[in-house]
Image: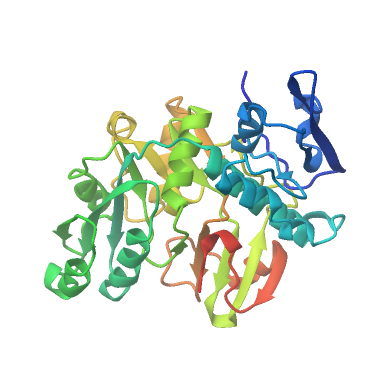
Length: 353
């Protein structure tokens, strides 16, 4: 079985090992040991050799590094291998360790470089009651790389005229439906999704932030996992009233909240599913609240396989409560924070200004 990012460990308990060429092939530690390593340091041979095994390791998210790269190594790979900033932080601080975060970011960059080259069509589905947030949401959708995106908007309680300038300035194809405020939120999502033509449907929340490779990462995760439903961890939160960013890698109970695992839970604003599977599951439940949770519950009970990938390209916004369907006090997020920073501090993969 080929290596994939599944099982990636946020914290390594061993240091760097060596990847070297010997007797016609690349030599590395056994697959069972790779996840325990901080990474692999490449020792290059004197002459040009095949890079298939190196690219397989990169696609699996094994952190690779090299002090230099020969001229025959492709420029994109060479740049990543010799960018050793992720090694600047000392490991050993447990889940709060910044070295682990930088290591995971490096892992994801390698996966992207070595991943599929096809450009899938993704239908982004967003229902919103807040016309003032539509423009920023569309701008983030337009940043998406590695996919052909279209947008299906559910305008919940207001008319298209209120968002016409934002829609007309969006370079993506945008379809919309208008629904009265009394229509359940899940039904608004379904009416919007009915217009989709993409291979995949991706749910989008109007007040969160998404990195430019968010959709491509989700489609890639669906490909290497074979999952029916994919989504990310809900890992980074911006607590707006406090002007604080927190990173969560455990539940309130202290149990680990890992990525690259099979699960029955993913962040609701990142649910992604093939259009055929979405139809087979009957769409979103026509409920006013808890739509994400009930959709995932129904998918799990139907036997659908749900996979949770990394959350480094996604940032959730939390205010004082009333504006969110997920009602938790700000203190909850502070309690489960592995890291806490002043200001807006997403992962570097968000490429935020």
